[in-house]
Length: 148
Image (cartoon, rainbow, N blue to C red; front, top):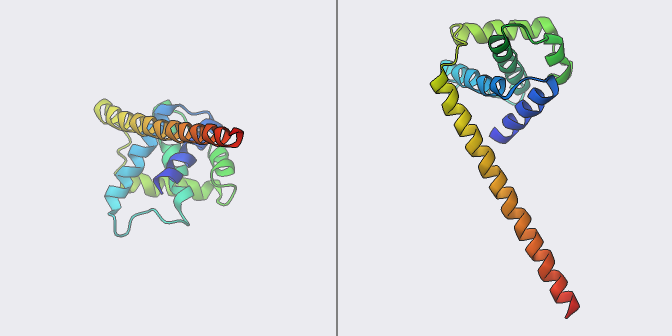
C-alpha cells in the first residue's frame, strides 16, 4: 500500500541520514520505473517491494549528492541483509536501464511531488488531530458520566 511505501521510505531516509529531497526524488524515480514497465507487469509485488524502494532510494541519493550512498548501508537496513550488494547493484542497473538512465528531476516536477507529499502529510496530521480530539471528547464524556 502507499502508506507502507511512504513509511518504509521515511524510516529508511531518516535512518540512513538522507534529506527529504532524496526521499522525493526516490518517489519520482520509482514512478518513472512503474510507468516504463506498465501497470500489468509493474514492479510492485510483496516479494520485491523492499528491493524496489532500496534501489530507488540509492539512485536518488547518488543523483542528489553526486556520491554513492553505501550499498552495504541500504542492504543492512532496508533489505535486512536479504540481498548481497552485488544483487542491489544489479537492481540499480536494471532500474536505470528501464528508465533510460533519466535520473534528473526537473525543478517543476520536484515541486509538484513535494507539494503533493506535504499535502498528504498535512491531511494525515489533520486526521490524527481529529482522532485525538474525538478520543479526548469521548474520555471527557466518559468522566462526566461516571461522576453523575
